[in-house]
Image 1 (cartoon, rainbow, N blue to C red):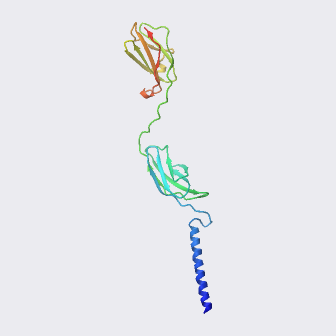
Image 2 (image 1 turned 135 degrees about the vertical axis):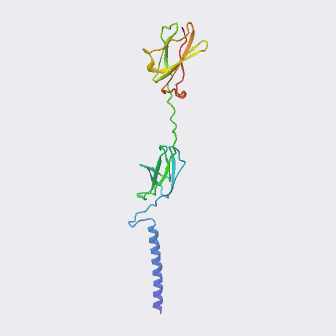
Image 3 (image 1 turned 90 degrees about the vertical axis):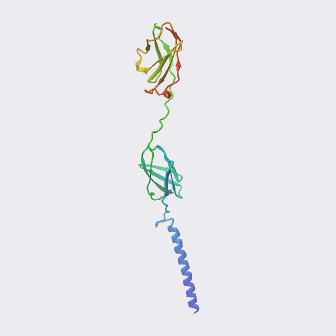
Length: 223
């Protein structure tokens, strides 16, 4: 009887050890594959928010600290579980996935998620600030009804104003290629009248107000 009792005690102890070994193996299988390499969980809960015509904020759930993000044909990286996508195209559908990395181990790619940027115009950058025309000059001979004007600029188009002493303003605009022999000729002025003049330049053929340089003032003259 004593031997039988000892046998039962031994069998019970063996069973406890076997169960402990199984639990230990199960725990190991949660973090390693059958080669002993650590496994990395696939990111979940992919979400796209704050979507504009050209940007989107992407996020996901993962306990990893390094990620690859695949957006259409591009692949990007992040050290946190989110990514700010920029330079997107308005009115375009995007598909994206995430892969988690831990050291040399990496997860499978996540299930695909998608979002679409809204259509809409993209605000253009402000026009470059143009240098005010320099070296303003009038041809040495001013006629009874006109004068020849010139200035230096790298711009393509101009607006010229000739202002009389009575504050009557004559406006002229055109391309720098409208000059004749390096001068812009005005022939409809009033005789025996004092004038001031000024010029500004632009590269915008439509002449949008915010595309012009500052005014440059020329010297006074009398017809």
